[in-house]
Length: 191
Ligand SMILES: Nc1ncnc2c1ncn2[C@@H]1O[C@H](COP(=O)(O)OP(=O)(O)OP(=O)(O)O)[C@@H](O)[C@H]1O
Ligand SMILES: [Mg+2]
Image (cartoon, rainbow, N blue to C red; front, side):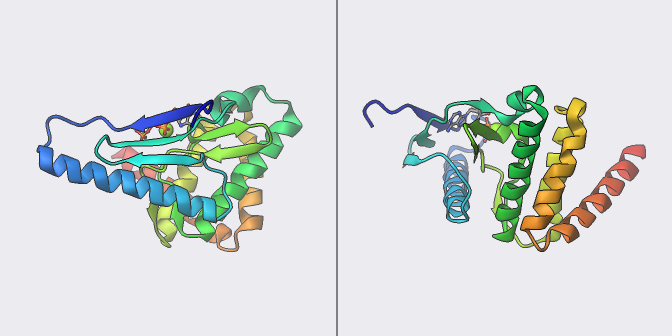
């Protein structure tokens, strides 16, 4: 790997857990993350190249992506370019969900803007699921990011939704579910 910049994603061992249980939990998680990354790549989504998976050390060694997190870049991009990035975000979400990949933490913090492409990272909370509810939670989180981190440009979320629905036939139904999830959230918060 000479000359290549790499990132070590290492999980810290939680000392309050039983060491044997902790080890199997960490192994499960790291395998889950790598499996989902590779499935995402197969679905045509850019992810970092994985150089090695070190189970005893609880770490993944992967390609370092240059550029910035979409979270940090989006608000300062020219309007057209920002919209283009948002359409790509919608397309990524569509590809994930069309392949029953639920990211689990689908926010602009876990997307890196590398030239013209968006590279998706951090599948540690992800799973394989065909459930509307799970896909809905992904889209709900993404929308929340636009209302919090990107509140000055929250209308850009319309571009995300539009490209999501165009690229994924089940998209409209997922977005309907999101409305239900949001209603539920408001209701429980009042209690
Ligand atoms: N391959 C990569 N190339 C460049 N930067 C990366 C890469 N992987 C991670 N990063 C940077 O490190 C940050 C944290 O990485 P990541 O999101 O995977 O971990 P995390 O949020 O701490 O994970 P977890 O939710 O599993 O605890 C990212 O927001 C990004 O800035
Ligand atoms: Mg993260």
